[in-house]
Image (tube, rainbow, N blue to C red; front, side):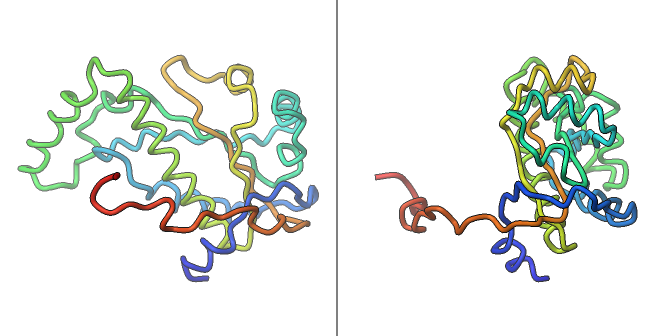
Amino acid sequence: MQVSEAVRARRAIKWYDPDHQMPEETFNKLMEHAILSPTAFNIQNWRFVRVRDPQQRKAIRAVAWDQAQVTEASELLVLCFDNKAWEHEPQRYWKNAPQEVQDMLVPAIDGYYRGNPQVERDEGMRSCGLAGQTIMLTAQELGYQTCPMDGFDFEAVAKIINLPEDHTIAFMITIGKGIKDSWPRPGQLELNEVMVTDRFA
């Protein structure tokens, strides 16, 4: 499948075959692509919680407006980010770069993030957004459907997955074999309504 085909075909699917199990090889391929997603300063701050335990899935469904896809999809991923990824041995993010690049960028990481929690959070949300789109498009190519979700109690899910204090949840994605198509795109705006050239009027 071409990227353009995956973009056009991807929809938020909420109805899944509850008996389908994604082969481990397929899941690994999916996640190997996910971790190629870009992050600022290459800090790779996303963290992926793969929820497999049925009881844990039921607990999350209970705090996610009882949305069936939480328990019926083959996979449930909670996309989180480590707010402090930038200070965890940052030299390893650039270990394969030329020395002059390392000497320039590694110190810049500290200067960019230290004492700036808003930047930590903003970058984490951006990173998870990019990784989430990679996951959804790759899943589409592999013959799976997905649904990005923010309709849940974030604090409750954080407790269920034992989220570390310095981590933040961005959103969840369900992945599986859809059994019902989504409705037609409900109201796509024209490009000229959402894009401006150079500056807003």
